[in-house]
Amino acid sequence: MLSLSSTYIKKQPFYLFIPLLALGMAGCAKKAEQVAPRVVPVTMKKGDISPKEIRVKQNEPVRLAVSTLDVQHGFEIPELKVSEPINPGKPAEIALDTSRKGTFKVECGVMCGAHHDEMKAQLVVE
Image (tube, rainbow, N blue to C red; front, side):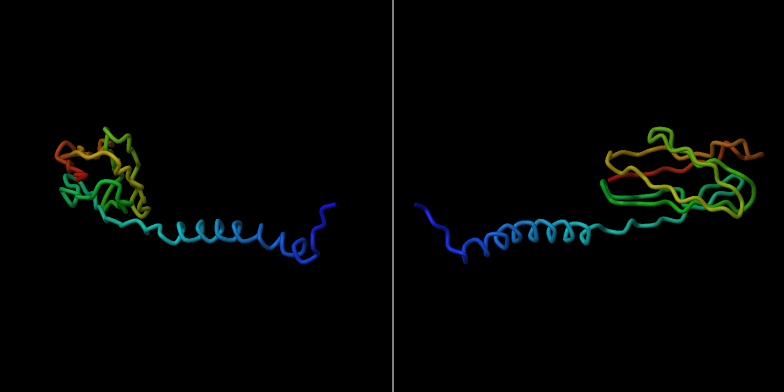
């Protein structure tokens, strides 16, 4: 007849706990590795988007902090399906999808008056 010692039975739950602890710690380590997004300030005003060129690295976490100095504008990057209204006194924070390399057109999407057609910039994902 097979007999298990009481020591073996008492230690068994402890041996099961070790792998679970290791998995839990690995999950915490991955959360700590996450990098805070780089925040790029962008200013819109009649006839201008500043900066004219926004350069980011591919897969870099980036958020644009977009504000207006005068009237309502629309911050648009058509190829990336970004379209956000920008209202005076209410800056918008826009998370960018930087997974695709390329140069993307940035423009104002709201008819804001004279020089509206001059409101152009570009996003470069390297």
